[in-house]
Image (cartoon, rainbow, N blue to C red):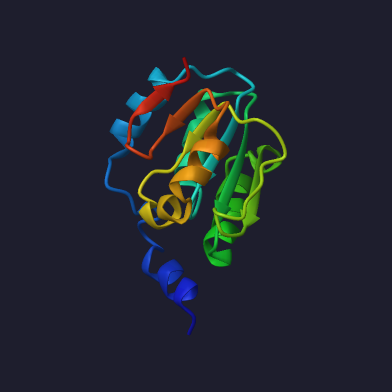
Length: 146
């Protein structure tokens, strides 16, 4: 059995594998300078729990989720469908280091995905994040661009 399948099975009843609670994430999301139609990027999204939560704060927003695990992304799509949000997400099955966004994002999440954050070399991360208004996760803080 492949590693992603094992991870997907292991997280069946607890889809969020993160070092912070939902309460903390919601507190940070409320502090973010979000727009109703924000574009959200979740790096290492897994089953998309945080991206879907961010969409509750952005009623007309759209979330891109990047992850290597096809099983987790399938659950992300299913969860979005069950919440009536299927048309507001785009799962991307690829390594965060090779992901190229098709435009700007208003909010970037990388919560509990140190493997995804590590994949972005420091120089690449700075270039890649230039222009983003809010980044939530690399140091688990909301950062506002000056």
